[in-house]
Length: 125
Length: 453
Image (cartoon, rainbow over all chains, first blue to last red):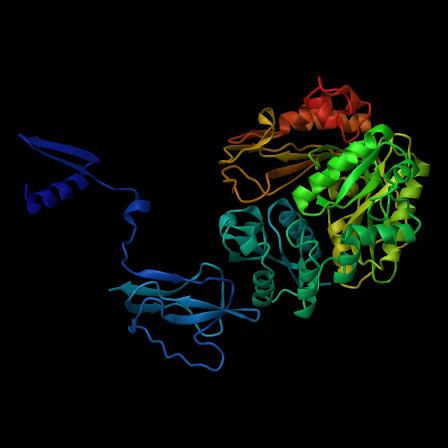
């Protein structure tokens, strides 16, 4: 069965109440199952990896006295410090988990963050 | 009064504190670990922030995380609840250093009263009876010292604690032998063979007095609570007043609590624990410098809201009642701690999803809980699901109400201690008010000789 026929069949299935269909021809067998559950069909596959906050606190792009000109689209290396979370007198390092491109920065300088809050999204190389 | 209070706790006590805050028009901030995302306190609070992973050490016990959460949310005070950081002097000090009010006593009071030896000294100074014993390490003339205290005595390891390193000696003839064993045992277990003696009180009752004191010097001591029904030092049932305490004894217990609160210049609510002997003498045991799990029984018979008194005292205001050291009370209250445990399997913890959760209600019934149908019990924290508190005009009526409420309590999905409580309320000795710290042992193993332990 080619992809064209498969697509046709799927389209046709969607016009019916059928949820599942099995088609057999000799040794060939194909089963089609429609996923009409909105919860599941709404899943968006993403290859981006989120970088989560290691602590509650205040986010800073750089440690005191340092600067950091991180921009969306920049290449980052595994282990590179993207910023810090200030917790009392302590600074917890926020690092990239893989080499890749920094696609999204979802945090601003000096903003409070919760534990586990996504702050960056990296597309791994 | 405060504008916004952060609750550095979870479970039913966080829910309990949020309720009073809401009544007072104070905003509430819940903090939670990753495992508690769906806990009730998170949903009920005006704001909620995630402070760390499931392990309490990195969330509910992390002073920097909690202080940071208070700063991020702009809370002006922190209520510590019970357990976790509630009796941690460093935490109380850290709040102070960061310009946040700790809703509890000063670091100094926590240190003084939380340290057993210090608290004992303070009690002695205030004229409160303490368990007779040797003040120092016993090495020579053990026989004379033991005789002075009077048998039975306990040989306690200086380095011991939590019920470990204790030997009971009933007769002088056993002393030398037991002394040798205690010394070598504690040497092996704690690396320190030093021991001291203390009077052993046979089947005591655990009696405690709740007190509250404000910074203007007003003190209230509430009628005693009887918490004798315990299993492995864990309270199961608490009631107030105690069936073993008469007016005269109550007056002396309350007077002792007032004296101690004044001697420590204590601000906030606290509890003095006593051992009450079968013959009616009481001895100071320790002070808890926080709100206790069993505080609702006191609230039920006196009409006070103890969390509100805590907030008043911490914000520098006067207690809601300043007309004297004692307060009137009415009727009798009993609390049952309902835990997720299987009592038929030696109280093994039970975890899982709460499939059905129907709580009792009606006259004189209060349920403090953070649980709801569909809630998944996290495995990381204590097993308490709810506190069932009942009130009625007499003890007998309150026991009948307990029986009814326990029957109305329907839980599916996990094992609970509801059936253990049913066993307790049906017990003749309990009905008659004849309880002591050996009660649960006898109830669960009736064949065991009395006072075997």
